[in-house]
Length: 141
Image (tube, rainbow, N blue to C red; front, side, top):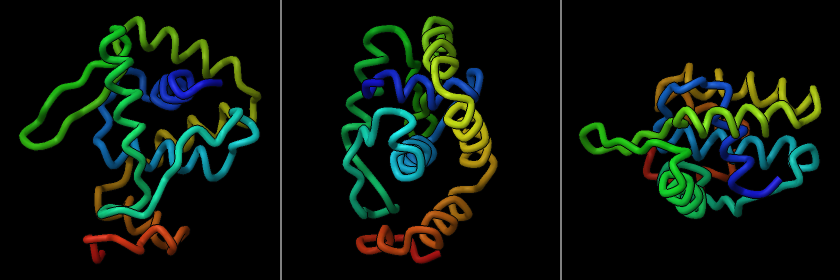
């Protein structure tokens, strides 16, 4: 899988739900960290940043996918929100279903996990599991 495919596959289980920046970053971080061999990864180079693991390349890929008509980017006050378009959902579903059962199940559960937690709870969970990612954090939760 390339970067575009992994982003599409990662967003596909949400079936059109929006993802905040922190949700997208943590979703892809956990995929790269926990199942890299199952998805031909790692795909990104996450570093400790203000709100935990971060790679600006995630946003570059999302912008490219937006320009191709596969991701819809909207603004809600100060946040950019990301969701798959109908064609993006079709590609994401195809990429997701091309994975092993183990990888697909992990990504489906992970998608639900990151979307179910508040900003504070998600960062706290990441910092608990990966304390090294707290190094440059401005978040003290």
